[in-house]
Image (cartoon, rainbow over all chains, first blue to last red):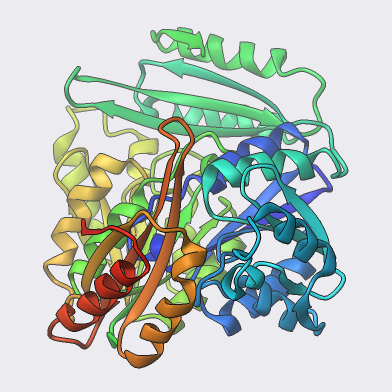
Amino acid sequence: MSKLTAGIIIIGDEILSGRTQDINSNFIAQELIKAGIKLNEIRVIQDNIDIIKNTVLEFHKAYTYVFTTGGIGPTHDDLTSESIAKAFNVKYCIHPEAFRVLKEYYPKGEFNKSRQKMAMLPEKAELIYNPLTVAPGFKIKNVHVLPGVPDIMKKMFKSILMKLQKGKPKKICTIETNLYESTIASPLSKIQNNYVDCFIGSYPYFDYIKKTSGVNIVVSSWERESLKEIINEIINMISLLGGKSSIV
Amino acid sequence: MSKLTAGIIIIGDEILSGRTQDINSNFIAQELIKAGIKLNEIRVIQDNIDIIKNTVLEFHKAYTYVFTTGGIGPTHDDLTSESIAKAFNVKYCIHPEAFRVLKEYYPKGEFNKSRQKMAMLPEKAELIYNPLTVAPGFKIKNVHVLPGVPDIMKKMFKSILMKLQKGKPKKICTIETNLYESTIASPLSKIQNNYVDCFIGSYPYFDYIKKTSGVNIVVSSWERESLKEIINEIINMISLLGGKSSIV
């Protein structure tokens, strides 16, 4: 098991209203697993100071790394920075470096009060630079605060990922079979019991148009050097049951 | 504010590993807002009995309605039903009606032990019928337990939605403008302060290929009969700032 853990907090009423499909957590999840960091939880929460504050504190204590997305823009509904300052009981004030970077970016006379709000951060937060629109994210303790716009978030995440401690990446292999999940369930469970350092996930799919169905069996392990042995057992089990299998 | 609230629990390691993009919560979110039910939180959690149990209990106490997806299939990694039985301190056992429906569905001799597992539910749970693959979901207290496969989940959700108490649907209108978020932030905040029964969300977008950018301003209210007045104020404000606006 990876000792490095993570939690993601997606901040935004637009996700909870169904207006926006969150795609940020899926991107971060994929990056974390490659970096050997185990993502334990994702939470989508409202734009509300108390909720943001309490969730950030809970995650800060529970996980090695915390990532938030959303709520760091210039408008009245952007409450993340202020909430996180409250969570860690530090001042919410103009960050000199963020102020300087933003002031340089905007044409003379256009660095208005709203834009200055994007330089309001928890005191002494470490900046996360934004190569696209300059408005920075920030890091305070183990909490990394990123914007909600996916293109910007991704670039900034890549830059912080370089600085994180990495674990051994989780080994993963997917085997597809045309058998029903209920046909393989019992032998698969026996194989699982013989490999306590592996996880076997079983994910059925149904294609109602092509009238096909099957199961993706996902084998993964944080500890094993190789998944060969368990994969061969699963392939043989499928074959004995008269099914087809392929590694995807 | 809608007095009816909801929380969604997405159960599945496949979401946390980044293998699968969750689309179930976005579908449920859209349906709930139309039904006048306020979605307060979405949590994605691991396939782990204690975590499922504790999260379900927390949501059960916090929200009018709880919806879970995932983890009710026939394999060893399907732990939702057992965990929910534990949460409510009831027996986890063969549900006679679920057993009957499943037995009827499968050809003689094919209703094996793994398939029978799908009839193992918290005692006296109310079944949620599954028109596609028969394996039922269930309801216990205010918790609605649905499968993870989106096509099946959607059909079953539609059937339970009919039985839920409805609130007044949230009124929503989106205004798009070509102005920067930081240009409108200050006047938008003033309008927000004048309409305490409305929420104004501000969501910037950037299209790096078309080199366009702008903001979607989402105005919503649980209480107001009409959003006309606030929309007109926003449109006028944009116009005064020299911007374009359109209702989308």
